[in-house]
Length: 387
Image 1 (cartoon, helix red, strand yellow):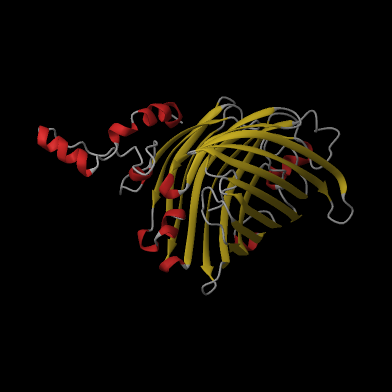
Image 2 (tube, one colour; image 1 turned 90 degrees about the horizontal axis):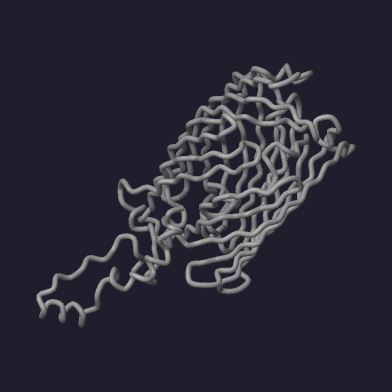
């Protein structure tokens, strides 16, 4: 986030970096002064710091070093090179939804580390979308039980999850609509090391997860990174089974709904609802959990989980915005009986800066408060980005 440190300086010196007008060019030529080249880092439209021109170069990338403040992992950092390739033949749509490649790694003070790579590309004039990704991770985590667990809720079981795997997904647009059919396949080899007595969880120590998934997606969002209006709905069903090379049989179903409204020229409201359901012999670390800013990953798990989050963003000055958000989630056991119900709430504030205008990419910082602790998140694009 070094960009935040140079924004004011960039604005103060923007006039020197902007391309001179015809009268100024003639005056300079008469005086024998060589014309100054426009800066790659200053947007000539508004004179603010911007990385769009650099990112659109064939080898241009966004070097990210993002602190990890996720309470479940501890403090650390993610380092990645993110390449954004605009699809210029698609016009404005090609900038709002570019092809993306990322390569990076992570490390935390608690002992988590790993490497990863992924790619999201759009083909055939925008009618085919492919996503591939994989990596090797070692994560230090805690298991707080399923639903309202009186034993593990306040005294969680620490464990290390080592996994390597990959996932591939293809989407096909239905004619000229905003609907897509989705097909995916995921594989992961997982090993768990418990830092305590695992009890019945010992059966989850070494598992291979493998299976296909199908889904339907509706996407009318006007931008991938920081939307201001439109709807995203995604329904997916996944089947993990020994018939596909796995060692554990279970199924999952997820429904995500995201909606943005432009309340005013500079005021935007967003809402996200997420419902996840698991069936069969699901490993404890693969169970759904409440996903809200301010709540650690895996803190509130259940066989079924529902959460809702609202976010209001006000772009109050030039490229600067402030964000307010809040949400609630619920996890429980047994879809019909609604047993061991547990709920959680979170809220927070954030700031954003429009880092790459051509791509519609805003970046910034969120500070969130959950039931047990506070957390800080660095955001590149919306907190709800789903390629």
